Image (cartoon, rainbow, N blue to C red; front, side, top):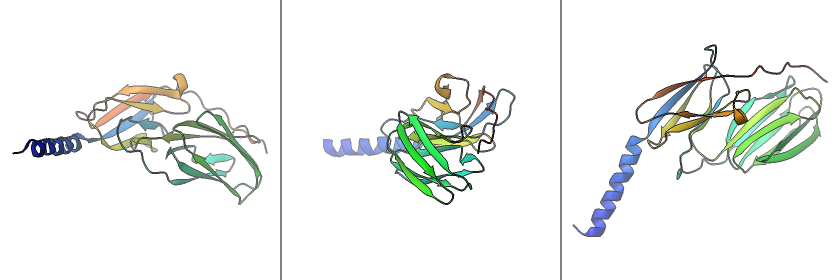
Length: 206
């Protein structure tokens, strides 16, 4: 068999082996009292993997809150900020990953913002200080947020991944983030216990 043919067959075999070793990983996040933690972002950094395609998302201002509170988006995506309240909002961020300002806009109006750089973007309202939201901009396909049961499943995680990053706005850790050791090739599930700060009391400053 010619040397080039053997080389090609070896590369194909390695490619199939890499695919076979990929595994789904389900992570459950609980607080120190054993309660499920919703809106925790779990990220597995896998070098060499194609970044997910940009998409279009929506964050609404409704009942003096940003909905959703936490959003995970691929880099390059656009978020449409819509005001569903009967009073005006002024949305802004000073985060290094995306600094922007959407000056006062009223009920029924929308404003788009494009997020090109991976990183965390903290969102606020310049009129209503109690309003907060957080956008995790990612350049990996292995990033999602937990549901009401505190659970998230990352599909097809490469076997070489040995840790995930866990983020939550109230997590007691530097940058509200911690690194957790995992082994998707051996364990299909992992449970992580985190300590959370108390949320700030909500108040309505119309």
